[in-house]
Image 1 (cartoon, helix red, strand yellow):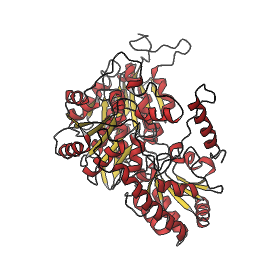
Image 2: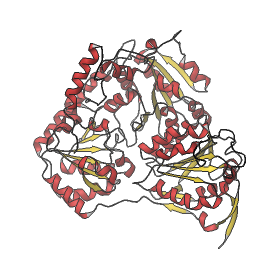
Image 3: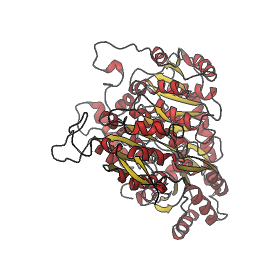
Image 4: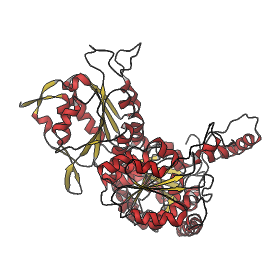
Amino acid sequence: MSTIRLTMAQAIARFLTAQKTDVDGEILPLFAGVWAIFGHGNVAGMGEALHGVRDRLPTYRAHNEQGMAHAAIAFAKASRRRRMMACTTSIGPGATNMVTAAAVAHVNRLPVLLLPGDVFANRRPDPVLQQIESFSDGTISANDCFRPVSRYFDRIARPEQIIPALQRAMNVLTDPAECGPVTLALCQDTQAEAYDYPESFFAEKVWTPRRIRPDVTELEDAAALIRNAKKPFIVAGGGVLFSGAEKALADFAEKHGLFVGETQAGKSSLPHDHQANLGAVGVTGTGAANALAEEADVVIAVGTRLQDFTTGSWALFKSPDRKIVGLNVQAFDATKHSALPLVADARVGLEELSRALQDWKAPEAWTAKGRDEKARWFDAAARYTDPTNAELPSDAQVIGAVQRSASPTDIVVCAAGGLPGELHKHWKASTALGYHMEYGYSCMGYEIAGGVGVKMACPDREVIVMVGDGSYLMMNSELATSVMLGQKLTVVLLDNRGFGCINRLQRATGGESFNNLLQHTHHVALPDIDFAAHAASLGAKAVKVKGIGELEDALRQSRGADRSTVIVIDTDPLASTDAGGHWWDVAVPEVSVRDQVKAARKDYETALASQRVGD
């Protein structure tokens, strides 16, 4: 057996360069690069190794470890999980900064390879700088925090251990059902140790998507259930986009007279004006999609994990006889709430299910209801996004301005706060992947870093990041990274002077405005933050606009800019779209001295009666 003597870190770098992927017939590197912030725990080992392959595997430097991991995760999502990135950090805070991002990837089923440095395997210099010491377990380090948020975790304490670890890592990263973050904690002394690795370990490997076909019995059972449905309804999740199943979904809906509601992850599965698309479903759903979801007797859940925002905390589907068909590559998701499972790739599953249904179509009366509800919703929604002269426009009015200035191929990126709800209802996605929302973990601070990753995956498309002042203040450093790397973004920063979304939720549950908007916090002085000046100090172009008219002018100018542009606009912290939507289970205190809380608790107990429990 031919061998090559390398350090463990060099072996990792060489292995990653050998991994390829087939994307629509084009063979590309599976790993588009490595994000790295070096410290004493990885600069000598991984730093030297990555330098040696920099012509084949680019290394990108960011400003925050969580931010760079967000960028890697967003890249994978915008690449339909067909390409991915790795991230390496030192031990200590560099490593634990990535734990939140690992949770984002885990919740959203997205591949990212995390390579944090770790303590010395030989333990001679213990405790080393930044080492977490357990008084009861000598094997624990800070990296054990990654265990619950990793699909696969391993600690590499001998150089030869990296061989099975990387092979297992690749199986997880490329598996459509098991896909998620992989953490390989690299003991810093082991990174520098040499071993005679078999040359076969570095042979080029081309990864192709595994398209799981449905079990014959499950397929027959699902088709039989749908044939007997009087009011069937499709919920399209992120699995539709990961599978590239947009055409299969459109064909399925058109052939069988069905309507589709889209989850946050599934939005853009169909063009907004497609005859079958009723838009967002669930807590942040349109009146059209939710009207059909409430009456549906069969819900065909395609590529969705059915989280509470999709199901209205399991109170949305009100038909007492309703059944769920769970079409999903992951059996864990396909069987939720006693669903009839159809474990399969979304594209293949829809195609085979359509063949099994033959010429069956939903009843015409149900189809007519869908058309009527869609027309009614479009009329209602327009009122919220139309131009306004208001000094403090609403989030929806800002979205309307961004939409009017956008092209059909633009990608809007967002994450947490009130914007996801307004965008889910109002953003009109025309092209697949044109709506990029991190709402599985709802992670504040994802927006700008995620925008960088999306732009790297889709360099020919304009990327518009919409972010609130709260999220911007949590994590904005990757704006400098976007400028440094030439990854141009348009960032629309909506300043409502605090956490407006949670303030509204606080009031809706009977609470007083407290500790959310800046004016309601314990303070000595209220900061007058100049966001435009701050963004400019990070290298971006920046402007503060007054009102919707100036916003639209600035958006048009930003399209021709040579680098990232930040457009700041003051907005109303209280206004939101009250049309559409659905109740969401947020527990209200059972005992309080305040009458508002008592009233909210009474409403809450009434709403709880609509939840479907145990099915």
